[in-house]
Structure formats: C-alpha cells, structure tokens
Length: 257
Image (cartoon, rainbow, N blue to C red; front, side, top):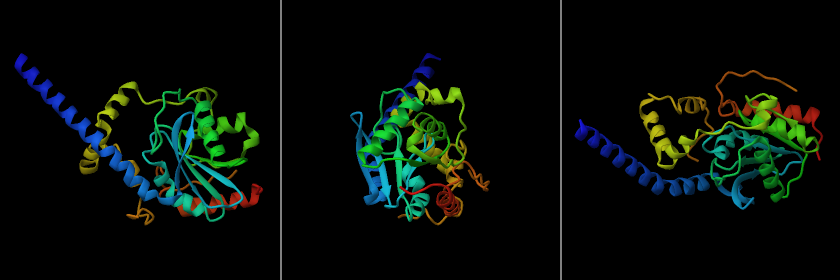
C-alpha cells in the first residue's frame, strides 16, 4: 500500500508540475493575443503602483462605465459588442479591476470601497470626470450602489445588467475566491478545468458562459426594468437590445455634460 500511495503521490506531483509549467509558459502569450484582439482602444493606467487595464471607446457627452462581474475572465472582450454600440453616442470605459483580465493583481483588501476607489482613480487618470453612468454586471451592482451612496455627485445613473442588489452587509465586503483557489489558479488548475470542460462539458464550469453567446455574430475571430431571455451574461447575445434600451433611458432621463 505504501508503494501505491507513493506512486499516486508522484503522479500528482508530476501532473501539477507539468500544469504549472504550461500555465507559466502560456499566460504571457494569452495576454499578448488578448491585447492584439482588443486593439487600439486598450490602454493601461497606474493605480496605487499597479497597472489597471481599461478600454475607452467613443467620445460622446456622457461617460458610461462598464463594470464586470466576479471572475469574468476578460471583461473588455466580454463587453465588446455592447460597448461598441453604446460608444456610438457616448464615451464608454470598460474597467478591468485588479485580478481580472489584463490588470495586475493586488494584495489590497477587495472591499466595495477599495474597488470603487481604484476605479475612480483609473477614470481620473484617463482625464474623465463624472457624473458617470454606471453599468454593473453581477457582483459589481454592489460596488455601483456603494459608489452612488458615498459619492452621489459622481453618479448620473446606474443601469444594472442582471446585477446584485444592495444590502448593507454586501456593501462592506465583496466575496473573495477561497484562498485555496489562488493556489489552484497559480499552478494552472483553472486553465486545466476549463480545457476539460470545453471538450467534455462534464464539469459545466464554462458552459453557461459559452451558451450565453447564443447565436450572436458579434464574436467573430476578430428606472426601467426590462426582462430578457438569456442567462447571467445577458449582454452577450442581447447587446443590441440592451444598448437601444439604455440609450433611450439616457436620452430621456440623463442630461449631457
């Protein structure tokens, strides 16, 4: 039995080592490919000594800030169809908070206050001043509500995309990945699980994200409430409808600067 356990342990160690090496080798190449796919709209700004990834599109009189959900792998590309449409009449900024997309990581606490303040600094670095139209998805709804509550002069409107609702407890903190998940991610475990799910759909880790793209042709190699068919990433296949509804709301209720 000792030899069996030793053999199994050796297999696990070797598998983790191979995964970590592949992850270390592939990550910078993935980032370069993403930067190329985003194109000239992409830039970095310095926030608290770290690089934050943002995309700026359009030059309209209102500034719309797209805020991603927890764990969204690449917010700028994910929001791309919606951002492009909104940018026809607005200045649209997609912010990738630390730890998401191409932004650096950070050891700073991931509270609503910290995330909002980092985003506010990034916007100032871009030379953009409020009031902003916040468009949060998922957990970012809590951040948007914190922003609107504590800096109301900076918020012209909040247009939520299947976003979390405000609670006093939720406003104080944001859900963090379990500590063990950071270790799994560091050795390429998340990459491996996603690759497995792509080929088998057994785990269902990315099936919902992938299915939310629907039949949308947008993803090529290159105080209204509206209920729409779709899953949590509603803005993928419904980008055109969401942009139209949002623009109508802004034109009717939000003054230009």
